Amino acid sequence: MTVAGSTLLKLGSRSVAFEGSLLSIVLGYLTSPVILAGFVTYGLAAFLWVYCLSQFELSYVTFVTSLQYVLLLLVSILVFKEQISVMQWAGSGLIMLGVIFWMKG
Image 1 (cartoon, rainbow, N blue to C red):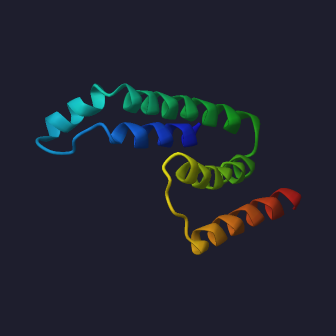
Image 2: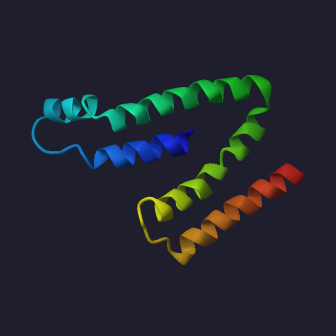
Image 3: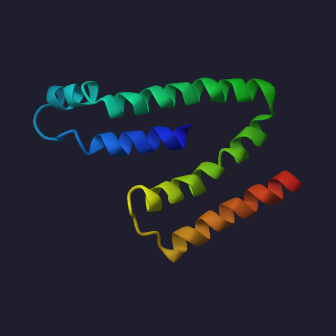
């Protein structure tokens, strides 16, 4: 859900002018349906996080959420057409390898 929230906030940020007073920026946030949807998604993710913490060990939940890094890379490529460097791919691969080792151990 945090990946969806980040994606919505990124999409919404394109429609808000980050110029002028702080009040005008805040009003831009509050009037953007996409940004509001991103904040709501993050809120739902927080509730889901608390639920998962009540059902599973903290170390397990934390490591499983590391998958979001790879999902964010995919969203970055597919939705935002960003270029991902070899080093970024290598770092994501190491994260995933670590998650696999941790879950097997």
